[in-house]
Each structure stands twice: as structure tokens, then as C-alpha cells.
Image (tube, rainbow, N blue to C red; front, side):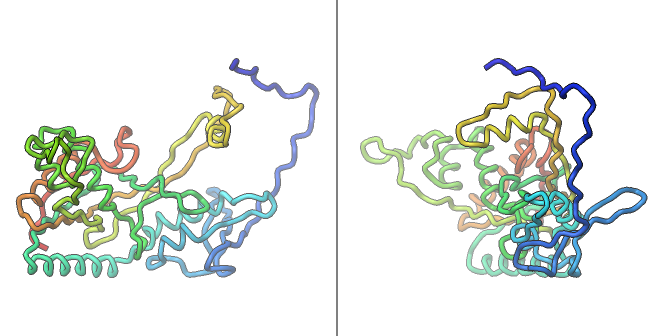
Length: 321
């Protein structure tokens, strides 16, 4: 398909179309109803957007704030971009609702649970991991109107690193390393297409072994007794009309071109210390998984945009919880 000529403005001087005035205040549609709105604040240093109508701060559940609140502009008949900016401003200022005391209480509860598991003959290993720069896990989890994606705890709404993400990162490293396939299949579960069959793992008539769960459980990584920092970052697609067309059924009629305006898009990242807890019946297997996880975090990274430097983890062993 040939690249169409760049559109040119019509000849003659014409008045620019009047831009619709953006309201100073837009109420939210969501479980909080009319008690929440976004308002535009004007100052000598520029304009910004903030949340009003309620005493937002630490203790506000980010799952409700991000996934159940939508700001709709009735004049433009679309979601209000200022509402997204107000939510991101709240997320960075109040660290997605993390409260110092509650975060410490949850960390102590996790430690008590691990001690109870140890009393039942379960072997536990605790790692302390910290992003070398920033961490972006769950950017695809855009279960909200404003498409703000981040991995959040299902109850508290705080930033976490899901256990499934930790196990997937560990499995990716183990599959590409010289680890014994028998150890990988036993520790991480079977069957695995990314790991060769164990030499002695074939069953009757050359069939692979039956599916089985791994011997090690990966728990969600939670903040290490204090809130982690939340920071806004930006990526800028340069051919947004092309990508928008590709998202529609049937493809696109707009080819990528240099005259398309770049459109900055804001997303959330975190940085700070997390605790990663592993447990299982075999001390040997738990230590295998811990070693693989530490190497995976250093070499592969967790989450999205690792090619741009996000997600690489410095990990070290902690003492018994």
C-alpha cells in the first residue's frame, strides 16, 4: 500500500476551530459516587489536576481508586485525561495508599505464617529483593477505565510482585541454564516444553511423566515492612493513529508516517525493597529455587520493559522470618 501524501491545510486564512473548554470539575462514576471528583488547579507555575471531595491519602485502597473510578467528560463525550492525571498524582504522592503501620503489620503476619509452616516441617527461604532502578510489573493488567496497569495485592491494593511472575522468571532462567532437567521438572512442575525430558523420566512406552505440581511454592513478594516508592514514567508512541487502527477489527487504513504527532502516555513504576518467600517439603529443592530466582532477577529481570533497564533485581538471602 503506497504511503499517502501528507495532508495539507486548505488555502486561505481560516479561523482555527474553537477548542471545547475543559470543565474545572468532573465528578467520578464509580462506587464512591458524587463524593469524589477531579478538579483543575491553576497556579503561576502551571495547571495540574487533583482529587477532591474526600480525604484521600494513605489507607485508601488502590484497587478501588484505580479499578472502580472513571472520570467522564460530558462535553467531549469521552473519558477525561485530567482524571487519569489526578489518579496518578494521588498514586505517587500517597504511594498507592500504603500505610506505614499497616504495611509493617502485614509483613509481621507473613513472618508468623512462615514460622507456623516451619513448625509443620516445611522448609522456608526468605530473600530480600530490590530493583536496581525501577520495576514495572503488571502493565498489561489494565482492568480500569483509564488503563493504568500495575500488579496490586488482591486485598490490600498495595504494589506486589506476583508469585506467578517470580516463578515464571525463575523457570525462564532455569530452562536456559545448565540446570539438571530432573531438578527443574521436580522443583517447578511438569510437563515443561521448554526443558528437555529428564534422562530417567520416561514412563511406559516412551511417554513423558504424568503432570505434577512443583515441590516449591512461590508467595507474592510484599513490601519489606515499609512502603515502596511509586513513580510515574512516560513512554511515547510516535505513530498512534497506526496503532489505534491496528487495534480495530480488520486492521488499519492509516500507515505509519513521520507526520503523526507523538503522544506521551504515563504509566506507574515502583522502587523499593520487597521480601520474597519460598517454601516446600524439601530443603534442597527450596534452595535450588532460591538460587535460580536470584540469578534470574539479576540476569533476566522481572516485569515489563527489561530491555530498557526496568525490573533487574538485586537479591540476597535473609535470616529466618
